[in-house]
Length: 141
Image (cartoon, rainbow, N blue to C red; front, top):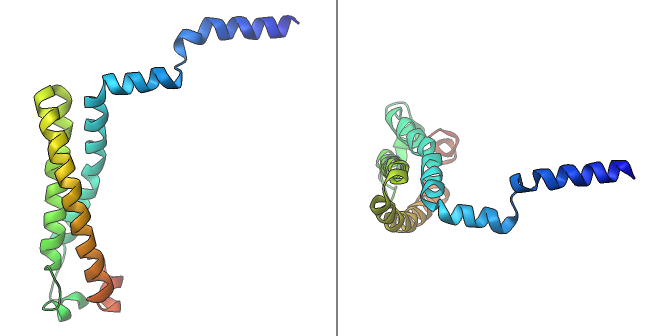
């Protein structure tokens, strides 16, 4: 039919614009600096949020301050370390888009940072489950 022929003609004409899975993976592999830099930039809001929450923490009004001697790591310090380390690696990742040597450094640091953040999150979950009171768990920090 003429409609089938027309749709096949349109598909043939637009096929150079369509990417197959293999082609898209090849493009990602060719542009891996921009992909990883983009991912690092996506973490930036998380780091900023952690730093903002830590800066707004007031021990005089917080119910978390009552058990502060029980915490494995001080809550404000915990958020600052997590936040500033995420910000530093995010900025480095965004800058690595422009430099191959910086990309290699960022890749190595990213792996070490991921291990650190994994351990840091385990500490945070332990503190949340075992050391924080119910009132403290309901607060932002």
